[in-house]
Amino acid sequence: MLQKTDNWKSHDDRPPEFHPGPVVSMAEVRAVAAFIRRNVPIIALTSFAALVVAILYLLVAVPTYTAKALLIVNSKGNLVDATAVSTVVESQIEIMKSESIASAVIEKLGLAQDPEFATSLGGGMISRLLGWSKPETEANAARYAVERFERKLSAKRVGRTYLVELTFDDRDPDRAAQILNDVAEKYITHQVDKAGLQDDKWVKDRLNELSTQAFAAQKALDDYSKNRNDSADSAATMDRLVAAAESSKNAYNNFRHVLRKIEATQQQSSPVFEASILTGAAPPLRASAPRPRNVLGIALVGGLLLGVAIAILRDFVRGMRAKELEHRQSTEEARIDRPLPDAIRPAHQSEASARATSVRLTGAG
Image (cartoon, rainbow, N blue to C red; front, side):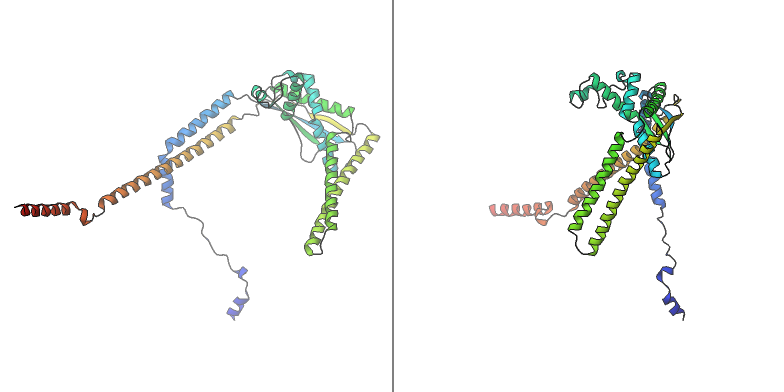
């Protein structure tokens, strides 16, 4: 009866087998300790050299300061949908980072004549000689300044709120804070003068992108419907194309619906967005880059790894040389110990020559 009961049991009910993990033997531990003890000078030397290079870098590198400001961008319309809120905030972030705002701040502070902003990112004289950048003119200097400005400015949404964090990197902490406050001021002025989203480049690009996706999905569905075969795979593919077409169409319609809500709000009140500075930018007290702890830590770890790699390579080369030398020695010993044939043994040759000589002497007598 017990045997029959066991037969009804499933194999999954059996207790799992115990598989012991890998055990490190004492011989391996001793080998690792001997390796470290043997290569301590190399590892210490590479670590010290890496720390010296890191210290020299910290002494030579120009510190960068990051100023921060916090803005609140609120819509006067009652936007309950999360997609609508995200569209509003993301569009305002793109306006803050737009070229028009950057150009206005650059013109106000005269940054186009500043060497930090008015040089190309391609390397100055070398890039111009190689044809990688255009010659330095007043118009090009303004373009270079805008390019540098946009790389130093960043904006991101704080969580799922209407708050936007602005940051700007500069070598001068006072100028970083001044530029960021001017960016916030220009953005608020821009919103007062131009309320709405329908003329914004980012909105137009987004509309064109969604429209293209919806058209492509619908075209793929129509083309497949004309050439479809009656099979299970064909039905599955058809369902997938229908879902993709519906999803693309709904995304486009939802975006247009959000824009229509904003346009309706714009007709009732102006401006549509109520932007204000929640926390103004202040000169940062400490440099954001380079960070001494990070640089020294990376240098130390890199030096240790480099020392270990050199030690492993050296032991590998030594092992190869030792094997080659051992092979040569064994080959030479094999040649020496190999027995010679009787025809070419020295003793046999001397005995044969002696007999031949005695026979010739007897014949002559």
